[in-house]
Length: 143
Length: 143
DNA sequence: CTGCATCCACATGGATACTG
DNA sequence: CAGTATCCATGTGGATGCAG
Image 1 (cartoon, chains in turn green, blue, cyan, brown):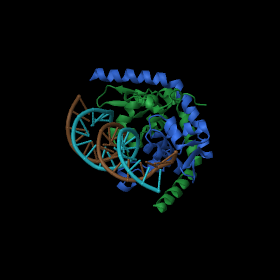
Image 2 (cartoon, rainbow over the protein chains, first blue to last red):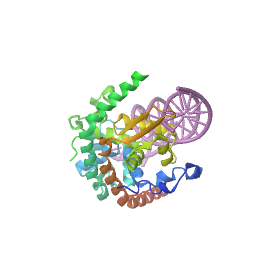
Image 3 (cartoon, rainbow over the protein chains, first blue to last red):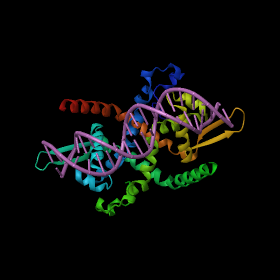
Image 4 (tube, rainbow over the protein chains, first blue to last red):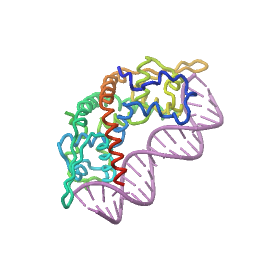
């Protein structure tokens, strides 16, 4: 059971106790949210997966492998991934420059979890989408 | 191995082939991204977890249990969660109104995955945060 | 080739006030 | 009690152009 997701929110009884500066303190400390937030961004998960399939990828390869990402965003995604030690960046000081990205150990350790999420998503996706559609039309009718 | 994350991007060679209307088509189809995107939002995961701990929660309870979420955002989060069939909403037509939220089966089936993510996050968080800090200061020095 | 700078559009979240 | 309405601040992502 995940007890530490909200490390100490149980000890706080009322939001009145929270001062402005303390806002977000609870959620910022939470490790899981912190990690999940990384994959909430549009491309991070996809980038990790694509890299994992190639063992070692160059920047432009990623650009091509992920059709509709701009280089600016891809660059940013890679930087946060690198900052988080999930991918390693290796620069060859040649002309023209060559940069390789590969997963770190910690990045690779994430793969089984992604695989499970994938599996869960695939088995439940149809139900979810169907339900979502029904829900939307019902809401539209109510309006 | 998660093969379906990018269902058919391998069959597309160049982004030049993509017309405007086809943009995002690849990623929208992707079930995992679709699911993960739900937890990318700031509160969804937390809400699911809190509900899972209580078997049945009322709106204002959630407001109190999650200290710094506004009712507007909480309401929206619950609505998408309900649309996705992850939580069920039960209204008692009393005065004043009473509404209960609980996890659906499909919502509960997600819990083990969240638990694993939690575990992974907790074991790797320290490393990640440390690396992130080092990375940031190094970047700051370069500037 | 790799990526940053700039500018812009839009979605998300937050604060406050109000209703059935 | 359980939300909705309104307005606003911010951040994230996209397009384009340029630089080392």
